[in-house]
Length: 362
Image (cartoon, rainbow, N blue to C red; front, side, top):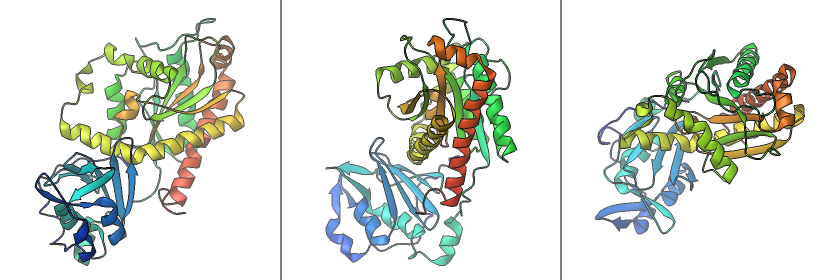
């Protein structure tokens, strides 16, 4: 599921000349001297599935096991995981997405039944809808202690590692390859954590943390996926969890390349939907099996969620700032139940994902 970026200059190597359906001629518009056609109409005519993510203004097109991801105001697309450049940027105007006519001619022919069979054989990369590898990311570590309980001084970095090890054991027993970003008390910079996940071509990423708040009454389990923080508590937590960037070399955290940023944002489009589903399964499992308030699915722009190329969630197992939950989080048996519940959520996602071929079958 990880995205491999291969930049190809231009699009001349794609399908042979592809004549637009005559019914689209009346829809053609001109922007900045270029000819454009509405994406929704284009996909409707050729039977291409199109999902539009209004949050990051990105569309995902699917047909015949092929995949195209494009973004408003960008001239870069992902074509079956490869980064390629259009002749003109995608336009978002009046609430409608318009793509260059040259996009339709060069790329639509490669993913529709109108393309020659030999061309389809070259571009189709049948995707095996399996979950084989999960990255488990114990939060903090080493000089980055994380949150510390107010009553008995339980430290987040230690309990996060305990939870992660237990989660790894359960997943491995279920036949999943589980890779830890750290397996001892060491500091791992956030960019390196994302790099480990991306280099492993992992299918899922689960970051494990314990929470804290200025309010001692705040309590409960939360599971985050990547989106804008929706409340003050989420924004504060986002700032806290990402603060370890200041502890290490942040050079690798800065990505000035326009193509890198575009690639990440495009990879995120599909992954946000799957990440939300994974978070939902985990929260449902915790609610069924653990005596803890379930604060449910939440959203924030954590670094490790933004910079991993697969469905990713960040678990907050409880509040160390709450004296009652701090006592619970000290108890290995309670942590074991949390880990078991998170694992069950991951395993349910695996079953549903594989049985529905990536959630595409009804």
